[in-house]
Length: 345
Ligand code: NAD
Figure 1 (cartoon, helix red, strand yellow):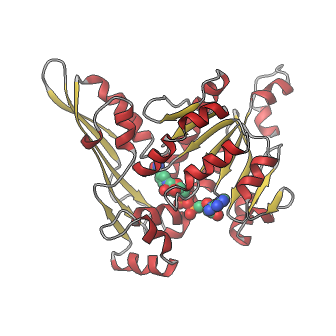
Figure 2 (cartoon, rainbow, N blue to C red):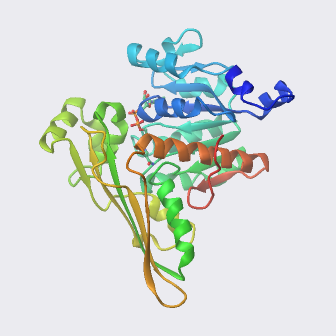
Figure 3 (cartoon, rainbow, N blue to C red):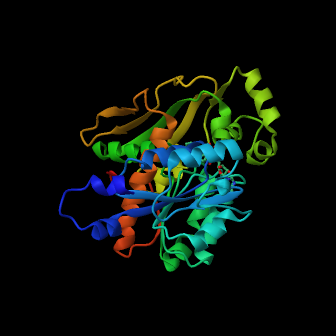
């Protein structure tokens, strides 16, 4: 907290600075939740004050320490054991909403079952909470479920930023930008490469990816034991090849008026035993210019950037954008394809 204030120019009133800090909470403290805490640590404009996992939560209005939280979570299984600031609870999200003073939450939660994120949004509405929520959810059907809450979110005074990770998220927004060169969009092809050293660091991500494999669905992936997941990964040498995924980039680009959803395809390769990416993540946007030329724009992410960097960075950029909408009284549900993220300092 003090570090954050001393970064500021001299002569500025500390209290005024404090009031400008966006107080951030992170729901879910697995792979992405922990990375989110590290991404936030050096930021001057945001202060990480709250986090919840399945068995507890931690809240500290002066700011949480990522190292202490990660150490506690990894050694004792829940942030609820953190001292001071931790509380064990079987309704950690509900308790945190009621206890903490937070401007915006990043929902780094598993979306298992597929309606889970929408049920969390409903919890915020029912609690009468007001602020900004950001998710990085992936499935088209999950996003559609949230769309049905648009009016309720608006009435509740919540600005909900939907699909704001890497894909959907960064790559969908890049596609919306690239589309501007064209008079007509023919196709948007997203191909991602993810390399993680071990699947257990990102259990929900890997489970949800398995749900896209032929013969699997969300229900089946949710019911699989860790041993079954490991057996499956053993058969494929740790590699998951995913094609024609049900990814919300399609409906997001349709809603943003870029192209119909059937022109959007998403696939990728995940290596669960190697942190090197198996291929370069990219989005290709093909269209026809006003002169009648057919062309393709390609936006490729640097191979050194991790999944965590490409999800958490955009998520907080959209959180900052959401805060400025909220301050102007603009509530409801927005996707990463219709709002520009803002850079968080
Ligand atoms: P993880 O399995 O590593 O961690 C999940 C965390 O959520 C754990 O801390 C767990 O305790 C907590 N949790 C589970 N149920 C809870 C509950 N009821 N209340 C409170 N906490 C609860 O997950 P992960 O691999 O970090 O993935 C998180 C999400 O991010 C997944 O849904 C994944 O699909 C998504 N994701 C999106 C993108 C993208 O580009 N859009 C990329 C990667 C992952």
